[in-house]
Image: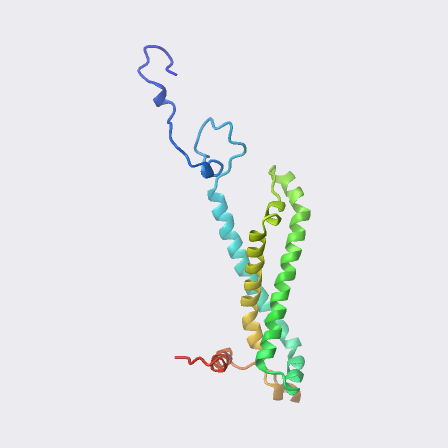
Length: 200
């Protein structure tokens, strides 16, 4: 490695030998020079950035979904009034609207998988990678985890709209007056007392 026999430098001045964990070879080898055998190595720190971006997108989508459902509640006040008039309880109304929210989330999950399967080949051509959803589909644990997260997000995003819709005053609805939902905090207190809990 020295340029000449009189050069005092040796191989350790050019290369450093060290151990690297096998799972880290592909994602943490960007600072290794002459790593010719590591096919298309990738900077693993970008994965953390992409994960954070994905979480923020999920949060924004959940808030937008909650706002849209609450805004559309003005078109369903007659339905709520009639159901309350025939004896439907608030818990049943809450269950219905929460189930609708979860159902929309599951439908969006299915549509997202279909869109991903269709457009991933075009994305691979654009970025020069070999991304695939089949790995995700071939591992039931990952698929069930994503499905469970979808159900949880759908439920959490639909909790407030469900409280809001279930708290309509049936008398005002049927009289055709100014329809306003009760204070959400009072509705939550009512639910806690129905479940046998005491708020401090």
